[in-house]
Image (cartoon, rainbow, N blue to C red):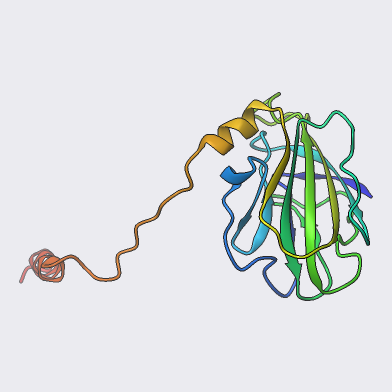
Length: 185
C-alpha cells in the first residue's frame, strides 16, 4: 500500500514504544529509534514524500530497484500494530499496519531515494519503501549506502547530553541573593 505524507515518516506502535533503547540514526544514516518510535530521516525539511509499505510473514528480499539507501532496524509491537506516522501532517491515505502476525518483534527494512536532491528544502523528490516481517531482535544494519545525506548522518557523532543532578556548589545561595536583591530586600 502506498500513500503521501508530510514530514519525516516514522513507525509507531499504539500503546507502547517500539524499542526500549534509543538508536542514533548515525548507525545507518537512514533510520533510528527516538522517543520509543522508529524515525526515518528524510533529506527534505518539509513537504510530501512518497511512502509504500508491505507487511510480510517471512523475510522478503530487498527491493532491487534504484534505491540509494537501504537499512534495517528491529522493532517491537506490544499491541500487534505498527503504523506509519507523520511527523508534521496527516497521511493522505491510511497505510496498512506493518505487523503481519500481531504482537511481537519485527524487522523493518527502509529503502530510500532522492534524499540528496533538496536537503533541508521542501520539494516533492523523495521516495520510501518499507518492508516489515517477524524476526528476533538484531542490531541495526546498513544494506546499501549511496547517498551523500546518509553518509553525512553516519559521520555525525551521537549527541551527548550532560545531565546535572544537583546544583553546582553555591548556586542556590547566588540565586537566593539575586532574587532577594530584585525584590528590594
